[in-house]
Length: 290
Image (cartoon, rainbow, N blue to C red; front, side, top):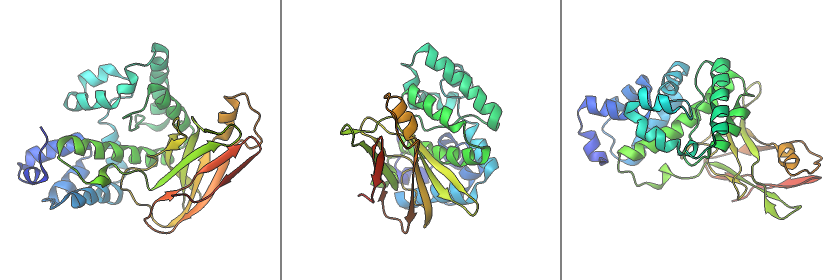
Protein backbone atom coordinates (compact mmCIF):
# COMPACT_ATOMS: atom_id res chain seq x y z
CA UNK A 1 0.00 0.00 0.00
CA UNK A 2 1.31 3.42 -0.94
CA UNK A 3 2.13 6.02 1.71
CA UNK A 4 1.31 9.69 1.47
CA UNK A 5 4.26 12.05 1.68
CA UNK A 6 3.12 13.06 5.17
CA UNK A 7 3.02 9.44 6.28
CA UNK A 8 6.41 8.76 4.72
CA UNK A 9 7.98 11.65 6.66
CA UNK A 10 6.76 10.06 9.90
CA UNK A 11 8.07 6.53 9.30
CA UNK A 12 10.95 5.15 11.42
CA UNK A 13 14.41 5.83 9.95
CA UNK A 14 14.99 2.15 9.30
CA UNK A 15 11.79 1.86 7.26
CA UNK A 16 12.57 5.06 5.33
CA UNK A 17 16.05 3.78 4.48
CA UNK A 18 14.72 0.39 3.40
CA UNK A 19 12.08 2.02 1.19
CA UNK A 20 14.52 4.42 -0.44
CA UNK A 21 17.09 1.67 -0.94
CA UNK A 22 14.51 -0.31 -2.89
CA UNK A 23 14.16 2.70 -5.20
CA UNK A 24 17.89 3.32 -5.64
CA UNK A 25 20.61 1.01 -4.34
CA UNK A 26 23.13 3.71 -3.50
CA UNK A 27 23.94 4.04 0.21
CA UNK A 28 25.08 7.64 -0.17
CA UNK A 29 21.92 8.61 -2.05
CA UNK A 30 19.72 7.00 0.61
CA UNK A 31 21.61 8.61 3.50
CA UNK A 32 21.46 12.06 1.93
CA UNK A 33 17.77 11.71 1.13
CA UNK A 34 17.02 10.70 4.70
CA UNK A 35 18.95 13.65 6.19
CA UNK A 36 16.95 16.12 4.06
CA UNK A 37 13.61 14.97 5.41
CA UNK A 38 10.92 15.96 5.99
CA UNK A 39 9.88 16.54 2.40
CA UNK A 40 7.34 19.35 2.59
CA UNK A 41 6.02 18.73 -0.93
CA UNK A 42 6.58 16.62 -4.03
CA UNK A 43 8.82 19.22 -5.65
CA UNK A 44 11.25 19.12 -2.74
CA UNK A 45 11.32 15.32 -2.88
CA UNK A 46 11.98 15.38 -6.62
CA UNK A 47 14.63 18.11 -6.46
CA UNK A 48 16.48 16.37 -3.62
CA UNK A 49 16.44 13.05 -5.45
CA UNK A 50 17.83 14.66 -8.61
CA UNK A 51 20.39 16.94 -6.95
CA UNK A 52 21.85 14.20 -4.74
CA UNK A 53 22.10 11.73 -7.63
CA UNK A 54 23.69 14.12 -10.12
CA UNK A 55 25.66 16.47 -7.89
CA UNK A 56 26.57 14.52 -4.72
CA UNK A 57 26.96 10.92 -5.86
CA UNK A 58 29.99 9.77 -7.85
CA UNK A 59 31.07 6.76 -9.86
CA UNK A 60 31.37 4.42 -6.87
CA UNK A 61 27.81 5.27 -5.84
CA UNK A 62 26.50 4.74 -9.37
CA UNK A 63 28.19 1.34 -9.59
CA UNK A 64 26.72 0.36 -6.21
CA UNK A 65 23.23 1.21 -7.46
CA UNK A 66 23.75 -0.61 -10.78
CA UNK A 67 24.75 -3.72 -8.84
CA UNK A 68 21.34 -3.91 -7.20
CA UNK A 69 19.63 -4.78 -10.47
CA UNK A 70 19.38 -8.20 -12.11
CA UNK A 71 20.72 -8.57 -15.61
CA UNK A 72 18.06 -7.99 -18.26
CA UNK A 73 16.28 -11.28 -18.89
CA UNK A 74 18.08 -13.14 -16.09
CA UNK A 75 15.09 -14.80 -14.46
CA UNK A 76 17.20 -16.84 -12.04
CA UNK A 77 18.77 -13.69 -10.54
CA UNK A 78 15.30 -12.15 -10.26
CA UNK A 79 14.25 -15.06 -8.05
CA UNK A 80 17.37 -15.59 -5.96
CA UNK A 81 19.34 -12.40 -5.44
CA UNK A 82 16.82 -9.61 -5.73
CA UNK A 83 13.88 -10.82 -3.67
CA UNK A 84 13.16 -7.35 -2.23
CA UNK A 85 12.52 -5.80 -5.66
CA UNK A 86 11.86 -8.96 -7.71
CA UNK A 87 8.22 -8.08 -8.39
CA UNK A 88 9.18 -4.58 -9.52
CA UNK A 89 12.02 -5.79 -11.72
CA UNK A 90 9.89 -8.53 -13.24
CA UNK A 91 7.23 -5.94 -14.12
CA UNK A 92 9.81 -3.49 -15.43
CA UNK A 93 11.33 -6.22 -17.59
CA UNK A 94 7.96 -7.56 -18.75
CA UNK A 95 9.08 -7.15 -22.35
CA UNK A 96 11.36 -10.17 -21.94
CA UNK A 97 8.48 -12.48 -21.00
CA UNK A 98 7.14 -12.75 -24.55
CA UNK A 99 10.54 -12.79 -26.22
CA UNK A 100 11.74 -15.78 -28.20
CA UNK A 101 14.41 -18.05 -26.75
CA UNK A 102 16.78 -16.83 -29.47
CA UNK A 103 16.37 -13.20 -28.39
CA UNK A 104 16.76 -14.11 -24.71
CA UNK A 105 19.90 -16.11 -25.50
CA UNK A 106 21.34 -13.18 -27.43
CA UNK A 107 20.44 -10.80 -24.59
CA UNK A 108 22.29 -13.05 -22.15
CA UNK A 109 25.35 -13.27 -24.41
CA UNK A 110 25.53 -9.53 -25.08
CA UNK A 111 24.98 -8.79 -21.39
CA UNK A 112 28.03 -10.91 -20.65
CA UNK A 113 30.01 -9.02 -23.30
CA UNK A 114 28.90 -5.73 -21.76
CA UNK A 115 29.95 -6.83 -18.27
CA UNK A 116 33.39 -7.93 -19.51
CA UNK A 117 33.84 -4.65 -21.35
CA UNK A 118 32.70 -2.29 -18.58
CA UNK A 119 32.90 -4.20 -15.30
CA UNK A 120 29.23 -3.68 -14.38
CA UNK A 121 25.86 -4.84 -15.70
CA UNK A 122 23.99 -3.30 -18.59
CA UNK A 123 21.34 -1.02 -17.10
CA UNK A 124 18.30 0.30 -18.91
CA UNK A 125 14.90 1.58 -17.85
CA UNK A 126 13.10 -1.38 -19.37
CA UNK A 127 9.52 -0.33 -18.63
CA UNK A 128 7.48 -0.48 -21.83
CA UNK A 129 10.36 -1.75 -23.96
CA UNK A 130 10.08 -5.05 -25.87
CA UNK A 131 13.05 -7.41 -25.65
CA UNK A 132 14.02 -6.67 -29.25
CA UNK A 133 14.44 -2.97 -28.45
CA UNK A 134 16.46 -3.72 -25.31
CA UNK A 135 18.72 -5.96 -27.38
CA UNK A 136 19.16 -3.32 -30.08
CA UNK A 137 20.05 -0.66 -27.49
CA UNK A 138 22.43 -3.04 -25.73
CA UNK A 139 24.30 -3.63 -29.00
CA UNK A 140 24.47 0.12 -29.63
CA UNK A 141 25.78 0.85 -26.15
CA UNK A 142 28.54 -1.70 -26.55
CA UNK A 143 30.02 0.83 -29.02
CA UNK A 144 30.64 3.37 -26.22
CA UNK A 145 33.63 3.66 -23.94
CA UNK A 146 33.22 3.04 -20.21
CA UNK A 147 33.05 6.73 -19.25
CA UNK A 148 30.26 7.41 -21.71
CA UNK A 149 28.39 4.32 -20.61
CA UNK A 150 28.43 5.36 -16.96
CA UNK A 151 26.81 8.64 -17.95
CA UNK A 152 24.08 6.81 -19.87
CA UNK A 153 23.51 4.21 -17.14
CA UNK A 154 23.35 6.99 -14.54
CA UNK A 155 20.43 8.52 -16.43
CA UNK A 156 18.70 5.16 -16.81
CA UNK A 157 19.02 4.54 -13.06
CA UNK A 158 17.40 7.88 -12.30
CA UNK A 159 14.48 7.02 -14.61
CA UNK A 160 14.04 3.78 -12.64
CA UNK A 161 14.31 5.65 -9.32
CA UNK A 162 11.52 8.05 -10.32
CA UNK A 163 9.25 5.17 -11.34
CA UNK A 164 9.87 3.30 -8.11
CA UNK A 165 9.26 6.34 -5.93
CA UNK A 166 5.83 6.51 -7.56
CA UNK A 167 5.24 2.86 -6.68
CA UNK A 168 5.73 3.44 -2.93
CA UNK A 169 4.37 6.99 -2.53
CA UNK A 170 1.20 8.78 -3.53
CA UNK A 171 2.68 11.27 -5.99
CA UNK A 172 0.40 13.25 -8.27
CA UNK A 173 2.49 16.15 -9.59
CA UNK A 174 2.80 16.04 -13.40
CA UNK A 175 6.59 16.48 -13.44
CA UNK A 176 7.12 12.84 -12.38
CA UNK A 177 5.98 11.69 -15.81
CA UNK A 178 6.70 14.60 -18.11
CA UNK A 179 8.56 13.99 -21.36
CA UNK A 180 12.27 14.62 -21.74
CA UNK A 181 13.39 18.24 -21.98
CA UNK A 182 14.84 17.29 -25.39
CA UNK A 183 12.51 15.41 -27.74
CA UNK A 184 12.46 14.54 -31.42
CA UNK A 185 10.46 12.87 -34.14
CA UNK A 186 11.52 11.59 -37.55
CA UNK A 187 9.43 11.78 -40.72
CA UNK A 188 10.47 10.00 -43.92
CA UNK A 189 9.23 12.47 -46.52
CA UNK A 190 9.96 10.06 -49.40
CA UNK A 191 7.08 7.82 -48.30
CA UNK A 192 5.16 10.13 -45.98
CA UNK A 193 5.57 7.86 -42.96
CA UNK A 194 7.25 8.17 -39.54
CA UNK A 195 10.86 7.06 -39.42
CA UNK A 196 10.52 4.10 -37.06
CA UNK A 197 13.37 2.06 -35.59
CA UNK A 198 16.06 4.75 -35.88
CA UNK A 199 18.71 4.81 -33.18
CA UNK A 200 19.19 8.32 -31.79
CA UNK A 201 21.93 9.56 -29.49
CA UNK A 202 21.72 12.82 -27.57
CA UNK A 203 25.19 14.20 -26.93
CA UNK A 204 26.54 17.04 -24.79
CA UNK A 205 29.64 19.06 -25.70
CA UNK A 206 32.29 18.94 -23.00
CA UNK A 207 35.63 20.71 -23.00
CA UNK A 208 37.15 18.03 -25.22
CA UNK A 209 34.40 16.19 -27.09
CA UNK A 210 30.75 15.32 -27.47
CA UNK A 211 29.58 12.67 -25.00
CA UNK A 212 26.36 10.66 -25.19
CA UNK A 213 23.94 11.43 -22.35
CA UNK A 214 20.85 9.73 -23.80
CA UNK A 215 20.02 7.05 -26.34
CA UNK A 216 16.78 5.67 -27.74
CA UNK A 217 15.03 4.14 -30.73
CA UNK A 218 12.14 5.82 -32.52
CA UNK A 219 8.77 4.12 -32.07
CA UNK A 220 6.10 3.48 -34.70
CA UNK A 221 5.27 7.20 -34.61
CA UNK A 222 8.91 8.10 -35.24
CA UNK A 223 9.27 9.53 -31.74
CA UNK A 224 11.51 9.15 -28.69
CA UNK A 225 10.02 10.82 -25.63
CA UNK A 226 12.39 9.72 -22.87
CA UNK A 227 15.93 10.44 -24.00
CA UNK A 228 16.37 12.07 -20.58
CA UNK A 229 14.79 11.35 -17.18
CA UNK A 230 11.55 13.20 -16.45
CA UNK A 231 12.10 16.61 -14.92
CA UNK A 232 15.85 16.73 -15.61
CA UNK A 233 16.99 20.13 -16.89
CA UNK A 234 20.20 20.45 -18.88
CA UNK A 235 22.60 23.35 -18.40
CA UNK A 236 22.91 25.85 -21.25
CA UNK A 237 25.38 24.71 -23.85
CA UNK A 238 26.14 22.96 -27.12
CA UNK A 239 24.30 19.67 -27.81
CA UNK A 240 23.97 17.26 -30.68
CA UNK A 241 21.28 14.83 -31.87
CA UNK A 242 22.74 11.94 -33.87
CA UNK A 243 20.50 9.80 -36.13
CA UNK A 244 21.61 6.44 -37.59
CA UNK A 245 19.93 6.90 -40.96
CA UNK A 246 22.13 4.32 -42.70
CA UNK A 247 20.67 1.37 -40.78
CA UNK A 248 17.16 2.74 -41.32
CA UNK A 249 17.51 2.88 -45.12
CA UNK A 250 19.43 -0.41 -45.34
CA UNK A 251 16.60 -2.19 -43.50
CA UNK A 252 14.27 -0.97 -46.26
CA UNK A 253 16.64 -1.90 -49.11
CA UNK A 254 17.02 1.78 -49.98
CA UNK A 255 20.31 3.38 -50.96
CA UNK A 256 20.73 6.53 -48.88
CA UNK A 257 23.23 9.29 -49.56
CA UNK A 258 23.78 10.22 -45.90
CA UNK A 259 24.95 7.38 -43.61
CA UNK A 260 24.09 9.49 -40.57
CA UNK A 261 22.65 12.86 -39.65
CA UNK A 262 24.09 14.94 -36.80
CA UNK A 263 22.13 18.02 -35.76
CA UNK A 264 23.97 20.54 -33.59
CA UNK A 265 21.88 22.90 -31.49
CA UNK A 266 22.13 25.20 -28.49
CA UNK A 267 20.22 24.97 -25.21
CA UNK A 268 19.68 28.41 -23.70
CA UNK A 269 17.28 27.80 -20.80
CA UNK A 270 15.09 25.20 -19.08
CA UNK A 271 12.29 25.23 -21.64
CA UNK A 272 11.36 22.26 -23.81
CA UNK A 273 13.40 21.72 -27.00
CA UNK A 274 11.92 19.65 -29.82
CA UNK A 275 14.44 18.81 -32.56
CA UNK A 276 12.69 16.96 -35.42
CA UNK A 277 14.28 15.43 -38.52
CA UNK A 278 12.70 15.25 -41.97
CA UNK A 279 14.57 12.75 -44.14
CA UNK A 280 14.60 11.20 -47.57
CA UNK A 281 17.36 9.15 -49.22
CA UNK A 282 19.05 12.23 -50.65
CA UNK A 283 18.27 15.06 -48.27
CA UNK A 284 17.21 16.14 -44.81
CA UNK A 285 16.01 19.19 -42.92
CA UNK A 286 15.33 20.20 -39.33
CA UNK A 287 13.88 23.03 -37.27
CA UNK A 288 13.08 23.84 -33.66
CA UNK A 289 9.61 22.46 -33.05
CA UNK A 290 7.24 22.62 -30.11
